[in-house]
Image (cartoon, rainbow, N blue to C red; front, side):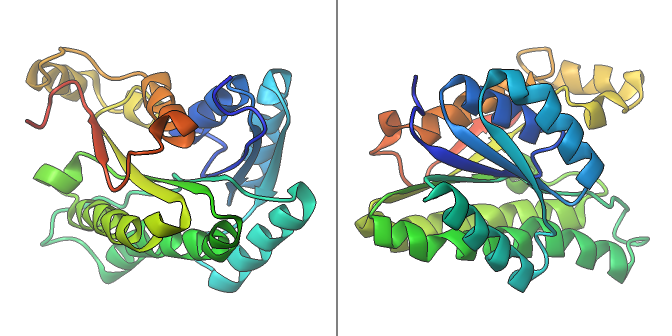
Length: 245
């Protein structure tokens, strides 16, 4: 198994892509800690995935710097280490620019950009001390081509790529790989709530003529989390069926 003996933290891990990533990591032998702001969803997810391996859930607000540092330190004390961090937590608050409020903009920046900073700060010194670490940041194809009504979301996902590439340069000498995954339209619960007419349009624009599956993103994350990717650093892996070329 690719991740045997590894301890992995997946933020926003209670649902959607985070849950799929957690499940794949468990199948690959990792001990997994999922974090989420939703305590009930954490409990349900941990119960759902308990048959695949050792998993626990911790309630955490990724936007609160001190809280995140405390939670990450607690995981390190309890588990002895954190080998892998997947910065998956993210939100949307869509509106055209002419209608977007400051609150909508700030909320998405806080979770999608500051949250990635807070969580990575919570593990980076530990990983440097260990001389090992895998940091995987979940971006989006919107970082490359924008998306109507998503000024805030697209901006934060572009920022995630910029942070990924900066940290790859800073941390490689310490044995830490930092990479990003940029999913296209994936068949999560959130996307499946989109009207079918719009989903049909998305499929038509995608060369593969379908939505992606959550486990296709999870498989890429498992590769980046494993020692098979030791020479992969600062990469942005687009998984979008060819939507952005």
